[in-house]
Length: 383
Image (cartoon, rainbow, N blue to C red; front, side, top):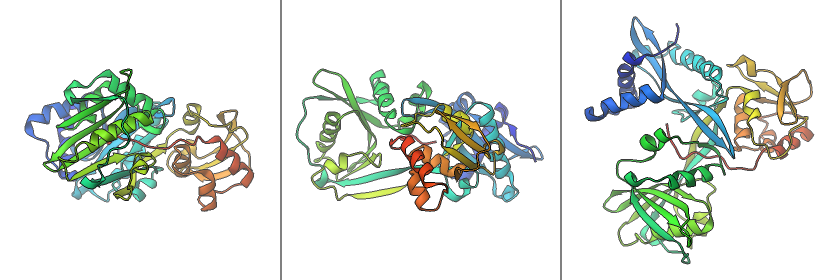
């Protein structure tokens, strides 16, 4: 059994496998454009049996933000096989091989959206962020105290550089947000019928935006709410509240720790909160070489357990802010999964230690705790 890089002639077969496995259909008039995107912006890997595609996945070479730092990231999507090829170990082999492909390409980290969390934990992935969607009724659309700025409403075709600049500044306040490239903005951010509302302060500077669509006659769906300051947050909310005569329901996708809902007169809203994306560290030294520390981790020793990537299954000692492989006996024992949860800020070292999910001397755990940034993890995108 051997995985291989799929070629252009394999792309349609891979796409048909996705349609079957994930139960959707790409319209014929969009088929060529989808194949072109796959060819230009993705790497596909697969396993063939008797010349026929038996399993495949798509690798998206992307980058993420960890605070101000930008890091290469391998996005995994479209992991699929046909029923007749299941339970032959094809997906296990494909994922294992692809982890090494990403590492060899200089990607220190990988991310994916799981169909089943425990399955991907076996390959070293761990949850790093949740998603929170609020459902507001007409009665909840109450305006806050007015602000001095203005709203510029536009169609998605009127997308501007200002929107990208706002997003870039916003992404730098989180761990895990995509560093969006031009093709991502063009093909992956907007839905077919999206509008944009851009907030400008009294000096005309763009400080926030929302992306939303009218999903039905009485429902409005906000897929992104991005505000760089309190004024922009209030201004954008007041714009939404002005729709109170038009809609019975508004769905609002917000980062879990965004303060907007807390600011409302009655924050008791219907809310759906669930684990969203997973991350996997592929190369421990390379990852922390680019990491944006809060305090110095010098002296912290990590005994990392990685059952897939043997190069990570070692002892790493931090010298200043970089790691070196060492033979130190005293240190923190943790899996590659828990290391990702800590590094992205999803779970703190002390919390995991108290839960028995990592082990080590309390003094070193507390030093590690102080070195990890208190920055919220999030990703607005999907792949």
